[in-house]
Image 1 (cartoon, rainbow, N blue to C red):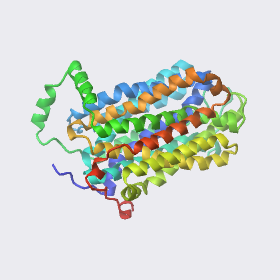
Image 2 (image 1 turned 90 degrees about the vertical axis):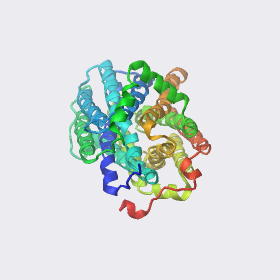
Image 3 (image 1 turned 120 degrees about the vertical axis):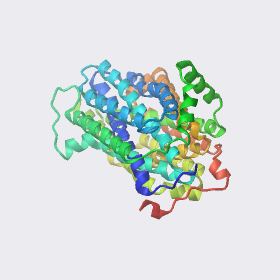
Length: 446
């Protein structure tokens, strides 16, 4: 069945839920390490406490992807999962800043990440389901644009509440007032934007719904589903196998940054002696501003990304963007002025825009429509496995260095991202190999 071309408004509507999802991720990425330290965690314990995100993704995403491949309801194939995940995530975001103990926060992070994954994974397949191949680069770039905007607000919100709206933090609170209110606003944003996508976008039904349901009924059951996921892993397309290595090193580098950037800034740029110092809070807030800047760059750069990919090819575009991100992370080691850090974040933001779009656009062209959901879920393995690896290695190999010089982890992240850029050149892009380029004119973004 030939898929109809979509207008810019239709692509925006089908992607808007990612704004809310990334609002929640942005809050989590910018604040969870600090929340753990507020509640008594030591620096070397942070990586292990963060394992909730990769482990839940490893388990949840392929299961949800496979389930959404086999679902058809009044809401469609992917939208029931968007909505269920949004409800659960919104409740977890409300509960998180109420944490009184370290393990309460860690437990809630597991629930939050599982819920976000229920919403997020089907969104990748959603774009591939609804857009013709020549529009997929634009569709994933729109997701990157909205992800950037959502993460800007999520990362910067505590700083905005403190410095623009003059919300006062109460001395002695486990978690600052600005952080608590940011999580409440993130909850509302998450639910509202996902609901907009659910209500504004219709999915394409199977050609023969009765045959679709009969075929999937024959594959039901826990053992059958597990066997199918395992078989799909063994039969991964060549392009997916090549992209797996790119993703492994990319996300190893990103996880180093997510874990230690805010703590590194607080300790090395703001010279905070410990987490009880006001300088530490200022450093964490500025780390949120840095995250907001790289996401703002992601937002702006996403407007140009389809045209750059059209001119240079998707592989070359992704490799160049990753190199700029690597340079940005490595440069943090040599900066002691908080405002100069914002320049480093430009390179990270350019890389982030490409990370959120180019691998998925390349991958989608190598997948059959019947397996898009499960393979998008399996593709997430190559995000979460490096995160688990990095978390364990950082804690075991260099705990003393991280205690005294947490910026070391950020530099390691830059080196790993540079390796990912080199590996990108090995990837086979089916669309480019067929001599076709994704259409992207400037007018499409106006």
